[in-house]
Length: 355
Image 1 (tube, one colour):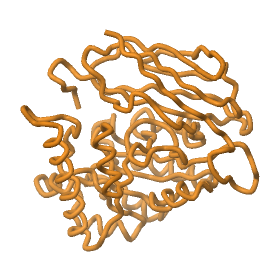
Image 2 (image 1 turned 180 degrees about the vertical axis):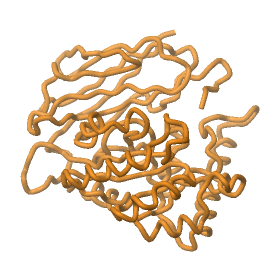
Image 3 (image 1 turned 30 degrees about the vertical axis):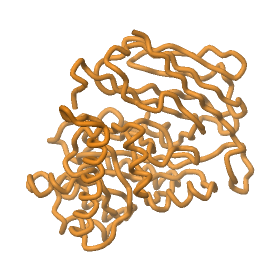
């Protein structure tokens, strides 16, 4: 079966809110980097070494990037006045090696950063995760601690014979219990930021988080812009092959493609949906339509255009998580690219997929 996915994106460069005094047409955003482990003896796919992390921090300093906390980023995004060259740093899971191998780097740079933790896993397997005492120590060097759910489960999965209402109530209990536990562990009220385990969410889960005043972060790529939904904020992975500064530097310099609406709203497809036609509509001002390229599973697509509507088809969607990345050069800022990512999940016949 073929699924038609329609991305209705309206790019309103210069018309999405107040800009800085330079009056450029470019709408800037905040590039959020995502890390997990720090070490050379941990799974490479989710790891950076301490030397790589320090190289990233040194690059940000040498190239005059301003590292902000997620709270500062949220305030600037809400104001619509986003300065250029903003970066935020996040670490998922609260692994103990982040403390053991990253402490010296955090002390040297004193950059703000956020650690997303799973309180239940911390209690059950303390040898793997940071203690509350270690997390409180890291607060002294720029850390804020935030919610990653209690157990890092696939939050969109329903249990057998569980209704949608029951599933959503279970997720609500987990999110709020984790927030309470982390605030008790830290000894103070903590900001309401949430990172989806595995970057997986659906409209009901996103709406639930907004109702409880959370800003929620996924694992699809792109900068955080003024039109990014507050429960679907993108982040760039910065571990493994993505740690290479030759390519990471391009992402750090990227610009948010201001997308106003997207269909389908649910990143989780049906098992039979293995072909996707992607369409988007944009007002072409700060880029040339013919220069846009989209990338998926090693394939490159140059969208066809009809007036202000572009389209292309993605086929052979595998079981599991994947994403389509679209980039296009900015006309007003040479060497920089607008970036937008579409996350997809295709389940198996049992409605599940690998971690």
